[in-house]
Length: 546
Image (cartoon, rainbow, N blue to C red):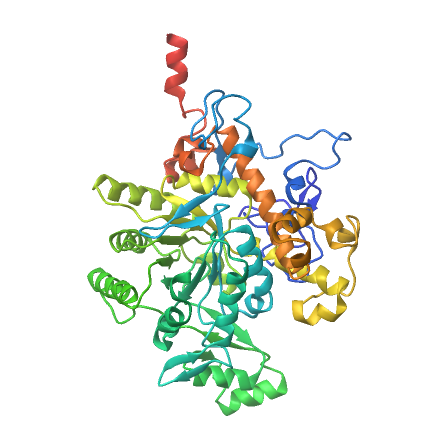
Protein backbone atom coordinates (compact mmCIF):
# COMPACT_ATOMS: atom_id res chain seq x y z
CA UNK A 1 0.00 0.00 0.00
CA UNK A 2 1.40 3.41 -0.96
CA UNK A 3 1.91 5.77 1.97
CA UNK A 4 1.26 9.36 1.00
CA UNK A 5 3.32 12.06 2.76
CA UNK A 6 1.75 13.69 5.82
CA UNK A 7 3.28 17.12 5.24
CA UNK A 8 3.75 19.50 2.34
CA UNK A 9 6.47 21.94 3.25
CA UNK A 10 5.89 24.05 0.14
CA UNK A 11 2.25 24.75 1.03
CA UNK A 12 2.70 24.62 4.79
CA UNK A 13 0.05 21.92 5.16
CA UNK A 14 0.02 18.88 7.40
CA UNK A 15 -2.37 15.98 7.81
CA UNK A 16 -3.61 15.18 11.30
CA UNK A 17 -3.96 11.51 10.41
CA UNK A 18 -2.68 9.21 7.68
CA UNK A 19 -3.30 10.78 4.26
CA UNK A 20 -4.80 8.84 1.36
CA UNK A 21 -4.56 9.36 -2.39
CA UNK A 22 -6.88 12.38 -2.31
CA UNK A 23 -4.67 14.22 0.17
CA UNK A 24 -7.36 13.95 2.84
CA UNK A 25 -6.78 11.97 6.02
CA UNK A 26 -8.23 8.47 5.99
CA UNK A 27 -10.27 9.56 9.01
CA UNK A 28 -11.55 13.12 8.60
CA UNK A 29 -12.88 14.62 11.85
CA UNK A 30 -15.52 17.34 12.10
CA UNK A 31 -13.60 18.95 14.98
CA UNK A 32 -10.25 18.94 13.17
CA UNK A 33 -8.07 21.98 13.88
CA UNK A 34 -6.12 21.62 10.65
CA UNK A 35 -4.39 21.73 8.49
CA UNK A 36 -4.52 19.59 5.37
CA UNK A 37 -4.59 21.27 1.97
CA UNK A 38 -8.38 21.18 1.67
CA UNK A 39 -8.86 22.51 5.24
CA UNK A 40 -6.46 25.38 4.73
CA UNK A 41 -7.82 26.15 1.25
CA UNK A 42 -11.24 26.69 2.84
CA UNK A 43 -9.71 29.70 4.59
CA UNK A 44 -6.97 30.96 2.29
CA UNK A 45 -8.61 30.10 -1.02
CA UNK A 46 -6.50 30.44 -4.15
CA UNK A 47 -3.48 31.46 -2.05
CA UNK A 48 -3.03 27.69 -1.53
CA UNK A 49 -2.29 27.30 -5.22
CA UNK A 50 1.18 28.66 -4.53
CA UNK A 51 4.11 27.84 -2.21
CA UNK A 52 4.13 29.72 1.09
CA UNK A 53 6.39 32.54 2.24
CA UNK A 54 6.69 34.21 -1.14
CA UNK A 55 9.94 36.18 -1.62
CA UNK A 56 11.62 34.28 1.21
CA UNK A 57 11.73 30.87 -0.44
CA UNK A 58 12.18 28.95 -3.66
CA UNK A 59 10.34 25.68 -4.22
CA UNK A 60 10.88 22.54 -6.23
CA UNK A 61 8.57 19.61 -6.95
CA UNK A 62 8.76 16.61 -4.64
CA UNK A 63 6.64 14.49 -6.99
CA UNK A 64 9.36 13.20 -9.30
CA UNK A 65 8.56 9.49 -9.02
CA UNK A 66 5.23 7.84 -9.67
CA UNK A 67 4.54 4.41 -8.23
CA UNK A 68 1.45 2.31 -8.91
CA UNK A 69 -1.76 3.12 -10.74
CA UNK A 70 -3.71 6.09 -9.41
CA UNK A 71 -4.86 9.55 -10.41
CA UNK A 72 -1.53 10.79 -9.04
CA UNK A 73 0.20 8.68 -11.70
CA UNK A 74 -1.37 10.76 -14.43
CA UNK A 75 0.37 13.97 -15.43
CA UNK A 76 -1.09 16.95 -17.25
CA UNK A 77 0.15 17.81 -20.71
CA UNK A 78 1.02 21.32 -21.75
CA UNK A 79 1.47 22.83 -25.20
CA UNK A 80 3.69 25.63 -26.45
CA UNK A 81 1.42 27.05 -29.12
CA UNK A 82 -2.19 27.50 -30.11
CA UNK A 83 -5.45 28.00 -28.23
CA UNK A 84 -8.66 25.97 -28.48
CA UNK A 85 -12.19 26.42 -27.26
CA UNK A 86 -12.00 30.18 -26.90
CA UNK A 87 -15.22 31.59 -25.44
CA UNK A 88 -17.31 33.82 -27.65
CA UNK A 89 -15.88 37.30 -27.92
CA UNK A 90 -12.26 36.30 -27.28
CA UNK A 91 -9.51 36.22 -29.87
CA UNK A 92 -6.41 34.02 -29.90
CA UNK A 93 -4.25 36.99 -28.95
CA UNK A 94 -1.91 36.83 -25.96
CA UNK A 95 -4.07 39.49 -24.28
CA UNK A 96 -7.19 37.33 -24.42
CA UNK A 97 -5.60 33.92 -23.81
CA UNK A 98 -5.04 34.35 -20.09
CA UNK A 99 -6.18 31.90 -17.44
CA UNK A 100 -8.87 34.15 -15.86
CA UNK A 101 -10.60 34.04 -19.26
CA UNK A 102 -10.90 30.24 -19.18
CA UNK A 103 -14.61 29.43 -19.01
CA UNK A 104 -15.25 26.54 -16.62
CA UNK A 105 -19.03 26.81 -16.73
CA UNK A 106 -20.78 23.85 -18.28
CA UNK A 107 -23.96 21.84 -18.49
CA UNK A 108 -25.24 18.29 -18.54
CA UNK A 109 -28.47 16.61 -19.48
CA UNK A 110 -30.71 15.66 -22.35
CA UNK A 111 -33.90 17.59 -23.13
CA UNK A 112 -33.42 19.88 -20.11
CA UNK A 113 -29.89 21.18 -19.58
CA UNK A 114 -28.58 21.71 -16.06
CA UNK A 115 -25.95 24.44 -15.83
CA UNK A 116 -23.07 24.67 -13.36
CA UNK A 117 -20.38 27.28 -12.69
CA UNK A 118 -17.61 24.91 -11.60
CA UNK A 119 -17.29 21.33 -12.97
CA UNK A 120 -17.88 19.59 -9.65
CA UNK A 121 -20.73 18.30 -7.51
CA UNK A 122 -21.13 16.95 -4.00
CA UNK A 123 -21.34 13.30 -3.15
CA UNK A 124 -24.56 11.90 -1.75
CA UNK A 125 -25.28 13.44 1.66
CA UNK A 126 -27.99 11.22 3.03
CA UNK A 127 -29.08 9.82 6.36
CA UNK A 128 -25.78 10.22 8.19
CA UNK A 129 -26.09 12.63 11.10
CA UNK A 130 -23.10 14.57 9.75
CA UNK A 131 -25.12 15.36 6.63
CA UNK A 132 -28.09 16.54 8.68
CA UNK A 133 -26.05 18.66 11.11
CA UNK A 134 -24.12 20.55 8.46
CA UNK A 135 -26.73 20.61 5.70
CA UNK A 136 -27.32 24.36 5.86
CA UNK A 137 -23.65 24.97 5.08
CA UNK A 138 -23.50 22.25 2.41
CA UNK A 139 -26.64 23.32 0.56
CA UNK A 140 -26.22 27.08 0.92
CA UNK A 141 -22.62 26.84 -0.27
CA UNK A 142 -23.52 24.63 -3.23
CA UNK A 143 -26.33 26.95 -4.32
CA UNK A 144 -24.14 30.05 -4.05
CA UNK A 145 -21.24 28.46 -5.91
CA UNK A 146 -23.63 27.03 -8.50
CA UNK A 147 -22.90 23.29 -8.31
CA UNK A 148 -25.18 20.26 -7.93
CA UNK A 149 -25.71 18.79 -4.46
CA UNK A 150 -27.13 15.34 -3.78
CA UNK A 151 -29.61 14.44 -1.04
CA UNK A 152 -28.60 10.86 -0.36
CA UNK A 153 -30.68 7.83 0.45
CA UNK A 154 -32.85 7.15 3.51
CA UNK A 155 -33.42 10.76 4.59
CA UNK A 156 -37.15 10.21 4.94
CA UNK A 157 -36.92 6.75 6.45
CA UNK A 158 -34.88 7.84 9.47
CA UNK A 159 -36.84 11.05 10.10
CA UNK A 160 -38.95 10.63 13.25
CA UNK A 161 -41.16 13.51 12.16
CA UNK A 162 -41.90 11.98 8.78
CA UNK A 163 -45.36 10.48 8.40
CA UNK A 164 -45.95 7.37 6.35
CA UNK A 165 -49.52 6.30 5.68
CA UNK A 166 -50.38 3.05 3.91
CA UNK A 167 -46.69 2.63 3.18
CA UNK A 168 -46.31 6.01 1.47
CA UNK A 169 -44.89 9.32 2.67
CA UNK A 170 -47.36 12.09 3.39
CA UNK A 171 -45.04 14.32 5.43
CA UNK A 172 -41.23 14.62 5.29
CA UNK A 173 -39.90 17.65 7.21
CA UNK A 174 -36.21 16.78 6.93
CA UNK A 175 -36.37 16.16 3.20
CA UNK A 176 -38.30 19.41 2.78
CA UNK A 177 -35.60 21.25 4.72
CA UNK A 178 -32.87 19.78 2.55
CA UNK A 179 -34.51 20.87 -0.71
CA UNK A 180 -35.73 24.26 0.48
CA UNK A 181 -32.33 25.24 1.91
CA UNK A 182 -30.75 24.79 -1.51
CA UNK A 183 -33.55 26.54 -3.38
CA UNK A 184 -33.25 29.63 -1.17
CA UNK A 185 -30.08 30.72 -2.97
CA UNK A 186 -30.49 28.79 -6.23
CA UNK A 187 -30.03 31.16 -9.19
CA UNK A 188 -30.21 28.83 -12.18
CA UNK A 189 -26.82 27.14 -11.73
CA UNK A 190 -26.37 23.84 -9.98
CA UNK A 191 -29.15 21.47 -8.98
CA UNK A 192 -30.70 19.61 -6.08
CA UNK A 193 -30.66 15.85 -6.70
CA UNK A 194 -32.70 13.46 -4.55
CA UNK A 195 -31.50 9.89 -4.44
CA UNK A 196 -33.63 6.77 -3.99
CA UNK A 197 -32.72 3.29 -2.80
CA UNK A 198 -34.98 0.28 -2.17
CA UNK A 199 -36.61 1.72 0.97
CA UNK A 200 -37.06 5.18 -0.57
CA UNK A 201 -38.75 3.65 -3.60
CA UNK A 202 -41.11 1.66 -1.39
CA UNK A 203 -41.89 4.71 0.75
CA UNK A 204 -42.87 6.79 -2.25
CA UNK A 205 -40.08 9.38 -2.18
CA UNK A 206 -40.37 9.99 -5.93
CA UNK A 207 -44.10 10.62 -5.74
CA UNK A 208 -43.74 12.90 -2.73
CA UNK A 209 -40.95 15.00 -4.25
CA UNK A 210 -42.58 15.51 -7.65
CA UNK A 211 -45.84 16.54 -6.02
CA UNK A 212 -44.21 19.03 -3.67
CA UNK A 213 -41.30 20.41 -5.72
CA UNK A 214 -42.09 19.55 -9.33
CA UNK A 215 -39.27 19.81 -11.84
CA UNK A 216 -37.04 21.79 -9.46
CA UNK A 217 -35.54 18.46 -8.39
CA UNK A 218 -33.55 15.81 -10.27
CA UNK A 219 -34.48 12.30 -9.12
CA UNK A 220 -31.67 9.77 -8.91
CA UNK A 221 -31.84 6.00 -9.06
CA UNK A 222 -29.12 4.36 -6.98
CA UNK A 223 -27.26 1.13 -7.67
CA UNK A 224 -24.49 1.64 -5.15
CA UNK A 225 -21.43 3.61 -4.13
CA UNK A 226 -17.69 3.24 -4.18
CA UNK A 227 -17.13 2.83 -0.46
CA UNK A 228 -19.24 -0.24 0.25
CA UNK A 229 -21.20 -2.98 -1.44
CA UNK A 230 -24.14 -3.40 0.97
CA UNK A 231 -25.99 -0.09 0.75
CA UNK A 232 -26.48 2.85 3.08
CA UNK A 233 -25.68 2.61 6.77
CA UNK A 234 -25.80 4.70 9.92
CA UNK A 235 -25.16 3.98 13.59
CA UNK A 236 -27.46 5.17 16.35
CA UNK A 237 -26.76 5.41 20.08
CA UNK A 238 -30.37 5.27 21.26
CA UNK A 239 -32.09 1.93 21.84
CA UNK A 240 -35.46 3.57 21.34
CA UNK A 241 -34.37 5.08 18.02
CA UNK A 242 -33.00 1.74 16.86
CA UNK A 243 -36.35 0.13 17.62
CA UNK A 244 -38.10 2.92 15.72
CA UNK A 245 -35.92 2.25 12.66
CA UNK A 246 -36.69 -1.46 12.84
CA UNK A 247 -40.40 -0.66 12.86
CA UNK A 248 -39.79 1.53 9.80
CA UNK A 249 -38.69 -1.64 8.03
CA UNK A 250 -34.92 -1.29 8.09
CA UNK A 251 -32.35 -3.99 8.73
CA UNK A 252 -31.05 -3.17 12.23
CA UNK A 253 -28.04 -4.96 13.71
CA UNK A 254 -27.86 -6.13 16.42
CA UNK A 255 -31.62 -6.57 16.72
CA UNK A 256 -32.82 -4.02 19.31
CA UNK A 257 -35.96 -6.03 20.04
CA UNK A 258 -34.02 -9.00 21.46
CA UNK A 259 -33.87 -9.06 25.29
CA UNK A 260 -30.17 -9.95 25.34
CA UNK A 261 -29.33 -7.01 23.09
CA UNK A 262 -31.34 -4.67 25.28
CA UNK A 263 -29.53 -5.93 28.39
CA UNK A 264 -26.14 -5.53 26.74
CA UNK A 265 -27.07 -2.01 25.66
CA UNK A 266 -28.16 -1.03 29.17
CA UNK A 267 -24.95 -2.50 30.61
CA UNK A 268 -22.87 -0.50 28.16
CA UNK A 269 -21.39 -3.50 26.36
CA UNK A 270 -23.23 -2.41 23.20
CA UNK A 271 -22.99 1.32 22.69
CA UNK A 272 -24.34 1.72 19.17
CA UNK A 273 -26.60 -0.12 16.76
CA UNK A 274 -26.27 -0.09 12.99
CA UNK A 275 -29.08 0.50 10.50
CA UNK A 276 -28.66 -0.97 7.04
CA UNK A 277 -30.41 -0.58 3.71
CA UNK A 278 -31.38 -3.44 1.42
CA UNK A 279 -29.59 -4.65 -1.65
CA UNK A 280 -31.33 -3.87 -4.91
CA UNK A 281 -32.23 -6.28 -7.69
CA UNK A 282 -31.81 -9.41 -5.54
CA UNK A 283 -34.94 -10.94 -7.05
CA UNK A 284 -33.44 -10.69 -10.54
CA UNK A 285 -31.09 -13.30 -11.97
CA UNK A 286 -30.10 -12.04 -15.40
CA UNK A 287 -28.81 -8.94 -17.12
CA UNK A 288 -31.94 -8.86 -19.25
CA UNK A 289 -34.19 -8.75 -16.19
CA UNK A 290 -32.18 -5.87 -14.74
CA UNK A 291 -32.52 -3.94 -17.98
CA UNK A 292 -36.27 -4.48 -18.11
CA UNK A 293 -36.69 -3.48 -14.48
CA UNK A 294 -34.54 -0.38 -14.92
CA UNK A 295 -36.32 0.82 -18.05
CA UNK A 296 -39.66 0.27 -16.37
CA UNK A 297 -38.58 2.40 -13.40
CA UNK A 298 -37.38 5.23 -15.66
CA UNK A 299 -40.59 5.12 -17.68
CA UNK A 300 -42.62 5.39 -14.48
CA UNK A 301 -40.62 8.36 -13.22
CA UNK A 302 -41.16 10.17 -16.51
CA UNK A 303 -44.86 9.35 -16.37
CA UNK A 304 -45.31 10.99 -12.97
CA UNK A 305 -43.57 14.15 -14.17
CA UNK A 306 -39.79 13.97 -13.83
CA UNK A 307 -37.98 15.81 -16.61
CA UNK A 308 -34.49 15.06 -15.28
CA UNK A 309 -33.36 11.64 -14.04
CA UNK A 310 -29.90 10.44 -13.07
CA UNK A 311 -28.22 7.19 -11.99
CA UNK A 312 -25.53 6.60 -9.39
CA UNK A 313 -23.52 3.39 -9.65
CA UNK A 314 -20.74 2.04 -7.48
CA UNK A 315 -17.45 0.24 -7.96
CA UNK A 316 -18.89 -3.04 -9.16
CA UNK A 317 -17.16 -5.02 -11.89
CA UNK A 318 -17.09 -4.47 -15.62
CA UNK A 319 -20.48 -6.04 -16.36
CA UNK A 320 -22.29 -3.61 -14.05
CA UNK A 321 -20.31 -0.68 -15.44
CA UNK A 322 -21.28 -1.57 -18.99
CA UNK A 323 -24.90 -2.03 -17.94
CA UNK A 324 -25.01 1.37 -16.26
CA UNK A 325 -23.56 3.20 -19.26
CA UNK A 326 -25.72 1.40 -21.82
CA UNK A 327 -28.98 1.57 -19.87
CA UNK A 328 -28.47 5.22 -18.91
CA UNK A 329 -27.70 6.08 -22.53
CA UNK A 330 -30.63 4.11 -23.92
CA UNK A 331 -32.99 5.64 -21.34
CA UNK A 332 -31.69 9.12 -22.18
CA UNK A 333 -30.83 9.87 -18.57
CA UNK A 334 -29.36 13.24 -17.74
CA UNK A 335 -26.36 12.09 -15.72
CA UNK A 336 -24.53 8.92 -14.69
CA UNK A 337 -22.25 9.19 -11.65
CA UNK A 338 -19.62 6.45 -11.52
CA UNK A 339 -18.15 6.08 -8.04
CA UNK A 340 -14.93 4.12 -7.74
CA UNK A 341 -13.40 2.56 -4.67
CA UNK A 342 -11.28 4.91 -2.64
CA UNK A 343 -13.87 7.46 -1.57
CA UNK A 344 -16.32 7.35 1.30
CA UNK A 345 -18.02 9.53 3.87
CA UNK A 346 -17.57 7.57 7.05
CA UNK A 347 -20.15 4.81 7.45
CA UNK A 348 -18.59 1.93 5.53
CA UNK A 349 -17.21 -1.16 7.24
CA UNK A 350 -13.49 -0.39 7.24
CA UNK A 351 -12.07 -3.57 5.74
CA UNK A 352 -14.86 -3.58 3.17
CA UNK A 353 -13.79 -0.09 2.11
CA UNK A 354 -10.17 -1.23 1.96
CA UNK A 355 -10.74 -4.38 -0.09
CA UNK A 356 -13.91 -4.30 -2.17
CA UNK A 357 -14.57 -3.01 -5.64
CA UNK A 358 -12.68 -1.37 -8.49
CA UNK A 359 -10.32 1.55 -7.74
CA UNK A 360 -11.47 4.81 -9.25
CA UNK A 361 -8.92 5.30 -12.01
CA UNK A 362 -9.43 1.76 -13.35
CA UNK A 363 -13.21 2.08 -13.31
CA UNK A 364 -13.11 5.50 -14.94
CA UNK A 365 -10.69 4.39 -17.65
CA UNK A 366 -13.00 1.50 -18.52
CA UNK A 367 -16.00 3.86 -18.52
CA UNK A 368 -14.34 5.84 -21.29
CA UNK A 369 -13.54 2.67 -23.24
CA UNK A 370 -17.14 1.44 -22.99
CA UNK A 371 -18.56 4.86 -23.87
CA UNK A 372 -16.44 4.84 -27.02
CA UNK A 373 -17.92 1.48 -28.03
CA UNK A 374 -21.43 2.94 -27.82
CA UNK A 375 -20.42 6.10 -29.68
CA UNK A 376 -18.96 4.07 -32.54
CA UNK A 377 -22.29 2.25 -32.79
CA UNK A 378 -23.95 5.62 -33.34
CA UNK A 379 -25.48 5.95 -29.86
CA UNK A 380 -25.64 9.15 -27.86
CA UNK A 381 -23.69 8.46 -24.66
CA UNK A 382 -25.04 9.68 -21.34
CA UNK A 383 -23.23 12.57 -19.65
CA UNK A 384 -21.07 11.28 -16.82
CA UNK A 385 -19.58 12.36 -13.51
CA UNK A 386 -16.56 10.59 -12.01
CA UNK A 387 -16.28 10.08 -8.25
CA UNK A 388 -14.10 8.30 -5.73
CA UNK A 389 -11.33 9.88 -3.67
CA UNK A 390 -10.98 13.11 -5.67
CA UNK A 391 -10.24 16.40 -3.93
CA UNK A 392 -7.88 18.78 -5.74
CA UNK A 393 -7.97 20.90 -8.89
CA UNK A 394 -5.57 18.55 -10.68
CA UNK A 395 -7.93 15.66 -9.89
CA UNK A 396 -10.75 17.61 -11.54
CA UNK A 397 -8.75 18.25 -14.70
CA UNK A 398 -7.43 14.68 -14.90
CA UNK A 399 -10.88 13.13 -14.42
CA UNK A 400 -12.44 15.40 -17.05
CA UNK A 401 -9.63 14.55 -19.48
CA UNK A 402 -9.66 10.81 -18.72
CA UNK A 403 -13.35 10.62 -19.61
CA UNK A 404 -13.47 13.32 -22.29
CA UNK A 405 -15.78 14.17 -23.93
CA UNK A 406 -18.28 12.24 -21.83
CA UNK A 407 -17.30 13.40 -18.33
CA UNK A 408 -18.91 16.72 -17.46
CA UNK A 409 -18.37 16.88 -13.71
CA UNK A 410 -16.24 15.52 -10.90
CA UNK A 411 -18.13 14.32 -7.85
CA UNK A 412 -16.43 15.07 -4.52
CA UNK A 413 -17.58 13.66 -1.20
CA UNK A 414 -15.40 14.41 1.80
CA UNK A 415 -13.49 17.28 0.17
CA UNK A 416 -16.61 19.44 -0.07
CA UNK A 417 -17.70 18.53 3.46
CA UNK A 418 -14.55 19.82 5.15
CA UNK A 419 -15.28 23.54 4.66
CA UNK A 420 -18.69 23.09 6.29
CA UNK A 421 -17.06 21.62 9.40
CA UNK A 422 -14.41 24.31 9.53
CA UNK A 423 -16.77 27.22 9.01
CA UNK A 424 -19.25 25.87 11.53
CA UNK A 425 -16.54 25.42 14.14
CA UNK A 426 -15.40 29.02 13.64
CA UNK A 427 -18.98 30.33 13.75
CA UNK A 428 -19.65 28.46 16.98
CA UNK A 429 -16.74 30.25 18.65
CA UNK A 430 -17.46 33.71 17.26
CA UNK A 431 -21.17 33.41 18.01
CA UNK A 432 -21.59 31.13 21.07
CA UNK A 433 -25.38 31.50 20.97
CA UNK A 434 -25.35 29.75 17.58
CA UNK A 435 -22.88 27.01 18.54
CA UNK A 436 -25.48 24.27 18.92
CA UNK A 437 -27.42 25.33 15.85
CA UNK A 438 -24.37 25.24 13.60
CA UNK A 439 -22.87 22.14 15.31
CA UNK A 440 -19.69 23.94 16.27
CA UNK A 441 -17.10 21.71 17.93
CA UNK A 442 -14.59 24.24 19.27
CA UNK A 443 -14.54 26.29 22.48
CA UNK A 444 -11.94 28.68 21.13
CA UNK A 445 -10.16 29.36 17.85
CA UNK A 446 -6.98 27.27 17.52
CA UNK A 447 -3.64 28.81 16.61
CA UNK A 448 -3.96 27.37 13.09
CA UNK A 449 -6.86 29.81 12.63
CA UNK A 450 -5.88 32.83 14.72
CA UNK A 451 -2.63 33.18 12.79
CA UNK A 452 -4.86 34.40 9.95
CA UNK A 453 -7.22 36.60 11.96
CA UNK A 454 -10.15 36.61 14.33
CA UNK A 455 -13.17 37.81 12.34
CA UNK A 456 -14.89 36.21 9.33
CA UNK A 457 -13.73 38.87 6.88
CA UNK A 458 -10.14 38.38 8.06
CA UNK A 459 -10.28 34.59 8.07
CA UNK A 460 -11.99 33.76 4.76
CA UNK A 461 -10.31 34.92 1.58
CA UNK A 462 -13.62 34.65 -0.27
CA UNK A 463 -15.66 36.67 2.23
CA UNK A 464 -15.93 39.93 0.30
CA UNK A 465 -16.29 38.16 -3.03
CA UNK A 466 -19.33 36.34 -1.68
CA UNK A 467 -20.63 39.50 -0.02
CA UNK A 468 -20.57 41.18 -3.42
CA UNK A 469 -22.83 38.42 -4.73
CA UNK A 470 -25.42 38.32 -1.93
CA UNK A 471 -25.18 41.86 -0.55
CA UNK A 472 -23.95 43.16 2.79
CA UNK A 473 -27.32 42.79 4.52
CA UNK A 474 -27.82 39.20 3.36
CA UNK A 475 -24.29 38.17 4.26
CA UNK A 476 -25.23 37.86 7.93
CA UNK A 477 -27.65 35.06 7.00
CA UNK A 478 -25.03 32.99 5.17
CA UNK A 479 -23.49 30.33 7.45
CA UNK A 480 -19.71 30.49 7.70
CA UNK A 481 -19.56 26.88 6.52
CA UNK A 482 -21.00 28.11 3.23
CA UNK A 483 -18.46 30.95 3.13
CA UNK A 484 -15.72 28.35 3.59
CA UNK A 485 -17.17 26.24 0.76
CA UNK A 486 -17.26 29.31 -1.49
CA UNK A 487 -13.61 29.99 -0.63
CA UNK A 488 -12.51 26.42 -1.36
CA UNK A 489 -14.50 26.39 -4.61
CA UNK A 490 -12.76 29.60 -5.70
CA UNK A 491 -9.37 27.96 -5.16
CA UNK A 492 -10.38 24.84 -7.07
CA UNK A 493 -11.91 26.91 -9.87
CA UNK A 494 -8.80 29.07 -10.27
CA UNK A 495 -6.60 25.97 -10.20
CA UNK A 496 -8.63 24.31 -12.94
CA UNK A 497 -8.50 27.50 -15.01
CA UNK A 498 -4.72 27.58 -14.73
CA UNK A 499 -4.32 23.95 -15.73
CA UNK A 500 -6.69 24.41 -18.65
CA UNK A 501 -4.86 27.50 -19.83
CA UNK A 502 -1.59 25.59 -19.73
CA UNK A 503 -3.18 22.91 -21.88
CA UNK A 504 -4.51 25.69 -24.15
CA UNK A 505 -8.12 24.67 -23.47
CA UNK A 506 -10.34 27.66 -22.79
CA UNK A 507 -13.68 25.88 -22.36
CA UNK A 508 -14.54 22.54 -20.75
CA UNK A 509 -15.71 21.09 -24.06
CA UNK A 510 -12.22 21.59 -25.47
CA UNK A 511 -10.56 19.24 -22.94
CA UNK A 512 -9.30 16.06 -24.60
CA UNK A 513 -7.74 12.80 -23.52
CA UNK A 514 -4.52 13.98 -25.15
CA UNK A 515 -4.22 16.52 -22.34
CA UNK A 516 -2.96 13.90 -19.89
CA UNK A 517 -0.31 11.22 -20.06
CA UNK A 518 0.77 8.30 -17.89
CA UNK A 519 3.76 8.66 -15.60
CA UNK A 520 4.55 4.93 -15.62
CA UNK A 521 4.03 1.99 -17.96
CA UNK A 522 1.58 0.24 -15.67
CA UNK A 523 -0.73 3.24 -15.68
CA UNK A 524 -0.44 3.39 -19.47
CA UNK A 525 -1.42 -0.27 -19.74
CA UNK A 526 -4.43 0.03 -17.45
CA UNK A 527 -5.84 3.34 -18.67
CA UNK A 528 -4.89 3.48 -22.34
CA UNK A 529 -3.37 6.90 -21.73
CA UNK A 530 0.06 7.03 -23.46
CA UNK A 531 3.28 7.10 -21.46
CA UNK A 532 4.89 10.54 -21.23
CA UNK A 533 7.61 10.06 -23.81
CA UNK A 534 5.33 8.19 -26.20
CA UNK A 535 2.72 10.96 -26.34
CA UNK A 536 3.21 12.92 -29.59
CA UNK A 537 6.55 11.16 -30.12
CA UNK A 538 5.61 10.59 -33.76
CA UNK A 539 5.08 14.34 -34.25
CA UNK A 540 8.41 15.09 -32.59
CA UNK A 541 10.30 12.73 -34.89
CA UNK A 542 8.52 14.11 -37.92
CA UNK A 543 9.81 17.56 -37.01
CA UNK A 544 13.35 16.28 -36.64
CA UNK A 545 13.26 14.34 -39.90
CA UNK A 546 11.55 17.07 -41.88
